[in-house]
View 1: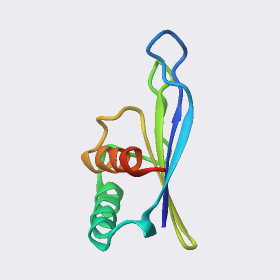
View 2: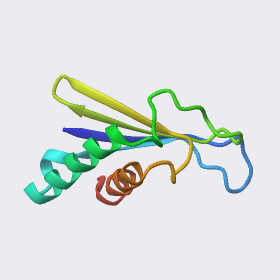
View 3: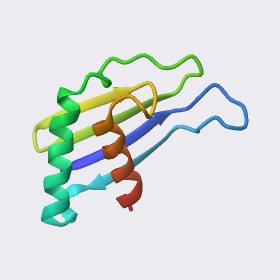
Length: 99
């Protein structure tokens, strides 16, 4: 399983994030970490703060998590980092563990 975190950057200014993508190979993590991530994915699928079709915020920010597990792919999109607790936790996992 692979999780990719992507951003669509803001419109500009000193605090604008540049678009980027980071990927995490979940299979390289411990069995306990893999179980935690799978639980978070299920929670994110059930959460109300994320959507595959979320609109960008007025400053153009958009965060996306793409989960690829064999032939199955899920895309979670959120207009901000506070959209859904499971989304936020997955986002932080990818940033902390991505190589």
